[in-house]
Image 1 (cartoon, rainbow, N blue to C red):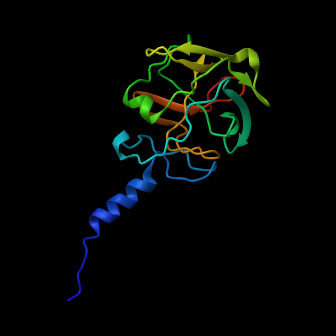
Image 2: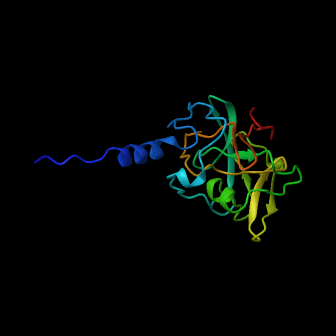
Image 3: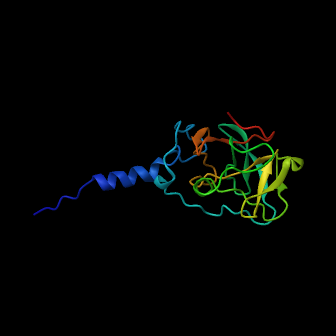
Length: 171
């Protein structure tokens, strides 16, 4: 007798793996849905979200224009709920989905970035987060270098936007 396995659990698991916050796998991913899935639905790998000493911020050309990235080429986002004064409003579940770019030392401007726009802000746990033009910088936990999965996505009460070399968000 041939055994038939239910497909529903496999279908849900596969959909969860590809859903993410935009589902694309390259820097030419779509702008993503208006509302992202709940953090529990993500299956991201958070490889090396902590920058080594002296976090490097540089510029890379993408479908969204020239944007800020880290030393590995991973997109750096800003959160519209954060204040211009540099205070982060992304903690708890938010910080697990959108890990901060930690300083580890004085941040360094790479190609295309402006050193005078770099700074840090102290997070509630005491660690220093890199800021650019006063905006705290974050990763999206499912992005890998060369991916931009969550541009212009509303999550945790605000929009997540990649950052131009001027410090302005890409809208």
